[in-house]
Image 1 (cartoon, rainbow, N blue to C red):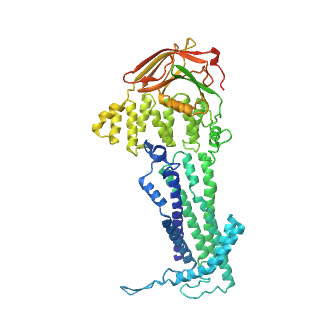
Image 2: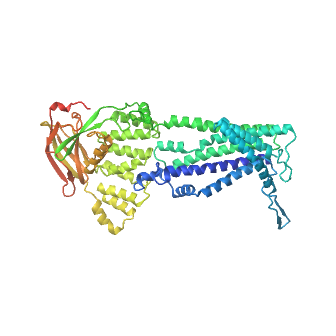
Image 3: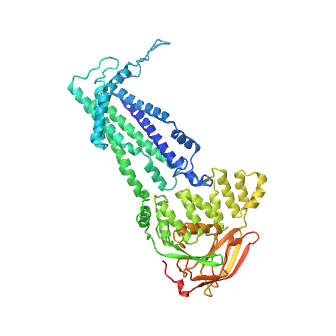
Amino acid sequence: MARKLRVLRLSFAYAVIAALLSFYPLCLETYQLVLGEDAPLSTEGETGHILPIPKSLLWSPATKNLVSSLTLLPPGAVICLAIVLFSILVFGLLRTLNPTFRLTTGMELDRTVLTKTYMHTAPLIKAFLIFMAALVPLFIVWAALHYLTGSSFPALAARLSLFGATAWLLFSRDGLAGDYDSLNYELPRDSQTVRSLLLRGACAGLGLAVTVWFWRYTESRALFDFFYSLGSIGEGHWRTIVLIVCGTAAILGFATAAILVSLGLPSASPSARIVLALGGFATLALIYFGRAVALPSYLASRYEYDPMRDSVDSEGITRGAKRLAKLAGVPMRTEEMDTILVFRRNRLAAWNIPRRSITGIDAGPESADRIERFLRDRKYVTSLADAAYKTLHDAASLQWDSEALLRVQFQNLERSPDISYARLLVAKLRSAASTPVSLKYADKLADESRFAYVTRDAKMAVGDIYARLGERSKAESWYLKAGVPAARLPELLSARTMFADGKLTGRLLLNGKPLSGARVGLVPFVTLREATVSTNTTGVVRPYWLRWIGPTATTDSAGRFEVTRIVAGEYRLLLTHPDIRLRPMDPSVSGTQIPGRLFVGFGRPKTDLGDIAITINPPTATSAPNP
């Protein structure tokens, strides 16, 4: 029983220390990737916590302080901590090899009072002298083998097997050390004992080599990459990474201790040694199978995870996008384009919008439906989420569909939270018409069971959205939550509560005839600059820019349109029609009574643009091929 307890005690001690040794590098990785200043995967770097963020991406102050404190430890403290932990491992090994090894010679007690203490370190001194005598030869042999054989696993196994055989021969109870309380230094005379020590030591060194080689499975970078492929990384993801990394290290430590104990106990029976050693090596084999085979296979099959998903081909399309297109059954890189007419300073500009997403995937309605089905089949959790949501976002933008855009943005934050979509959702609510749909998503953004509002600015952002949509009472509530003094509320609400019931009417004529079935929309005036600076080809604009389109309407059979629920502001008018297909900046399009910058507000709630006459010369230019 005592021997079994010793085995368990040492194995659990090794497991705990191995977990601690893996936790510090994990904290370094966490700080560098997620929590540090300018960290590439930070949930704060994207928004600075000035916007609401999904609660699943929230990090508690305690966790942040723990990670930061460990990461910012002075190098001297880190070295001392490592020395302490490795000293405990060495002490456990020496006690296993030789139960007479102690750090002190103990103490003498009378019946009631401590009368004497002996803090001599004779066993420790003897172990130190043996180690120092063997250090130089071992170092020379180790360095020579490393130079000759390199860093492969067989080379490492050979060096550690030699190291283990030497340690067993020198420090075992049946080896050179003998009884640590004695001053004798004598190698065993029985050749069978020598062979047993060397063989057991070599096997122990081999087990240690496997542990060292498998220590790579405690690295966390690949796990961070996986969870980031699902969205942004929150504390819940990090805890899973800690469980996998430190759990792997603990199992490695437990298995290693089992091997060392099985081969190091002086009086263990051969059957007990075999059972313990086989159990330890079997556990190491399970670690390899789990981390090198089963886990990668599971992530690839369940989540479509590919570490190389962001690598691009000669056309700039990622492997992840190609995989998504194949699995969802959607085409890649259509060359078709839509034409939009932009009303600018009494003239018309023809812009072309590719019908494909920035991912290179076709962004038509049918493709969007198939990608939606793909996400539903995966329960909205997949490593292809980035390509999927970018394609859905571009598809909704191409349709000028504010409701679909808000749905895609919110669906991402709810299902596969990516912090960048919080910024997109807030921006869309700041440009959308004041419709019941916009108010519905504003209410969802204000749902404190779903979102966290870490700073005052985040609460002010919600209040500003309500104020823009004309919801004065809800805006007041959020301004109060943000700590705005009650005395300032009337002034703030008067300044920020927008007129949200503007109306724009007019009639479109194409070559003298009413243009029916045309889609007209408004974009904030200040967003035109983004369209002109975000493209490499003049007049060709990414679908992503169309997310700014807010209120829209469709012309009737007489060419008339009525855009309603316009929030006060300055806008530009856009137009698209299935039959209008022009080259970028095509000079054949012109018009009369072309409106320029449009203002809607308290002083001008309604505007009638009258008849807007568009001319395309020659008329057949409407069917001109795209470039």
